[in-house]
Image (cartoon, rainbow, N blue to C red; front, side):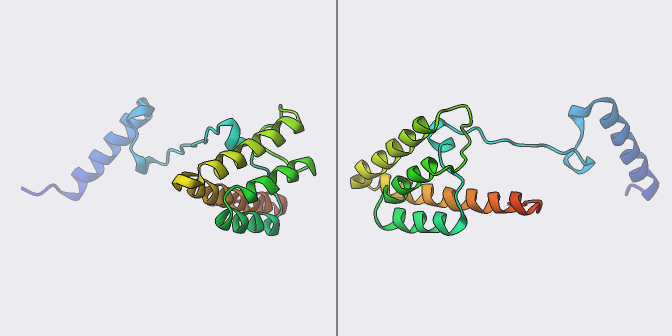
Length: 142
């Protein structure tokens, strides 16, 4: 016997009442908004927010000479670029970027550093794009 349309409405109403009573039992279609926040390590959080053209140049440099774009981005920190480490001193963030560049250069022999360097450059471009959206007041949907 097939369930009627009225039975489906009754079941939906019962599910909504159960979801209201216990928010943990709510289904994904009930309109619950979940926010996910990325926890960044100190090296990742030290990547500076740079202008888009500078970030693209650093990506290009990191693609062909592992660590070079990261090394250049370290000097962007000294020029006043913002990072996700506001409580750290500028010199500390500078040296974290230099350390990341050295790690990328030294491990490029086994391809790990080269791949890390490319991903680092991609992160620089992503941060530059997100910074551009924030400056223009456009809600970002990445």
